[in-house]
Structures are given as structure tokens and as C-alpha cells.
Amino acid sequence: MKVWAIIFSCLFLVSLAGLIVSVAITGASVMEAIRSGDFYIGWGNQAWDGYDISKIFDEAYTNVEIGVLAARTEIVASPDGVTRVNYSGNNNYRNVEFIAEISGNTLVVREKGSFLSGGWNWNWWNWGVSIGQTTLEIQLPEAVYNKIDIELTSGSVKGELPEVDNLHVNITSGSVVLDYRHVNTANHLRSHSTSGNITINGFSPETYDVYLTSGNQRISGLSGSGNIRLTSGTANIGFDEWNGELNIKITSGSANITVPRGSGVNDMNFSRTSGSFKWSLDNDTGSMSRSASGVSFGGENRQRVNVDLTSGSASISN
Image 1 (spheres, rainbow, N blue to C red):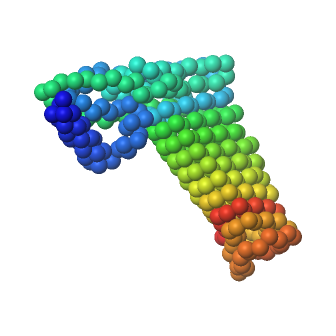
Image 2: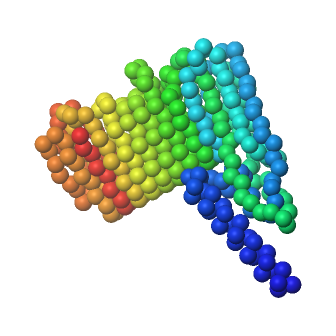
Image 3: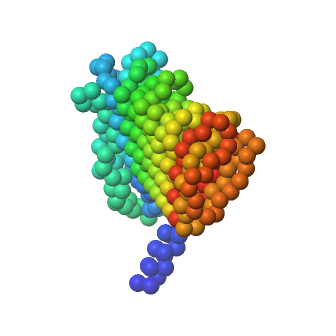
């Protein structure tokens, strides 16, 4: 019995080493592979069939909801004004349902379920490790959308967005990189990360809410009034227009704000348990490590800023 236990342990460690080597070569993430279910450690060749799901929609809609469990997702402009959704991979999953449909005035594209379907495939003549990945492409016609809602459990989402009035991004892990190249001011941005990374370039709303439980967010092109709240992590926020009140609340982590030349702060309230606030606006530089109120500094275009630090740091510069 001990001999069999030793043999089993050795074979398992060899398979695990193969997984790590495969990940190192391909650049894949071990946790991403585990979450996606696209791996096995065993003795034998796992037999899975590939799949390719394509759907075309001619109906009109104003909202888009995208839910991703682990796919590598890309949002692109439709070349001919037709909505297309292409979903493909090299494995079949027992517990995952893929949905692409128009429900009311909303295009819904979503992976539902769990990738961890379990199961072993034993073959004493061979062993191996398999890592795969689902991919999702969404082609959106050029139009003005009311809302685009993106939820990411793992995997990634990237692409160039069509014009939209409300953009909501919520990630548990993974990464989101979105480019926005439209000049009209949007209504609202909501960006939340439990972990992982969010990058949004060029989105300019009237109001915004940026929340980090952990991870990193980098947002450029911002405008309007809003809130930045960090439990932990790092937020790098760039404003193209400095024209609204900013509220910053940090439990831990850091928020780094950049604003255009000529910008300033008016009547700032600063409260802290620990941490510090720094500024460098035009030729005016300074820092604060004590609570204070009614502080003004910087250029002539001054907006109100409120900063509440439990710990961590915040800064504003141009």
C-alpha cells in the first residue's frame, strides 16, 4: 500500500511540474487555468471536442450586458452594421451555459455556470497537462447606446467601445482594457474592481463612481463630479476636464489624480487617521499630514475636493 502511495505521489508531482512548465512557456495564469477548467492533471489524453458558436442579430437594441466567466473577450466595431457574437474553444464544459440573445431592448451575452466540472481520466500508459481557453468576440454596430454593462469573473475584456451614455464595469479578477474615442460627454461611469486590473481610456462622463476593493484602476479622459473609494489597491485617475467636485475616501492604498494645467482646489476638507495628501499644481506644491478644512491652492480653475484617509495616500498634480 505504501508503494502505491509513493508511486501516486511521484506521478502527481511530475504532472504538476508539467503544468507549471506549460504555463511558463505559454504565459498562461495557473489560477486562470484552474478557474476556466481548461486543465487536467492525470495519466492519459483527455478527449474533448472543440466548439464554435456564432450568432447574428438584426434587431435594434439600446443596452448591452456582457458577462464573462473566463473567456478572452474582445469588443470590436461591426464592419457592416450587423451584430455578431462568436464564441469558441477547445473543450466542452458540463456546467457552463453560453447565452447570446436580445431580450427586450438589451443584447445579452453571457457565460453562466461553473468551469469546475471535475472528473479524472486515467490511463496508466501516459500522463499530461492540458490548458485551453475560450474566446469571445462581440461585434457592435456604430450607434449611441444607453448602457453597456460588463461583468468579469476572470479572463479578460478588451476593445474599443461605441458611443454610450452609461458605462458600468465590475470585475472580480482578470483584466479589462477599454478605449473610448467619442467627444460627446456621457452621463455616468461606474467602475468597480474586487481584484484584477481596469483600464479605461478617454471616457468623459458628467458623474462617476470608482471603487476598488483591491487591484488597480487606471482611468483617463475623465470629467464631471464623482467619488473615488479604495479599500486597498491603486487608482490612477486622469482628468481632461476639471469641472466638478471630487470626493476621495481611502481605507488603504493610494489615489493619484492628474488634472489639466491651470487647475486648482477650493475649500478642501481633509480628514485622516493616518496617511498624507500631496499636491503639485502649476507652481504650487505642498503636503498635508494633519486634518484641516477650508484649504485652497493651485490654479484659477478651482474645484472642491474632499479627502478622507484611514490610511494610505492621495495626491493631485498636473
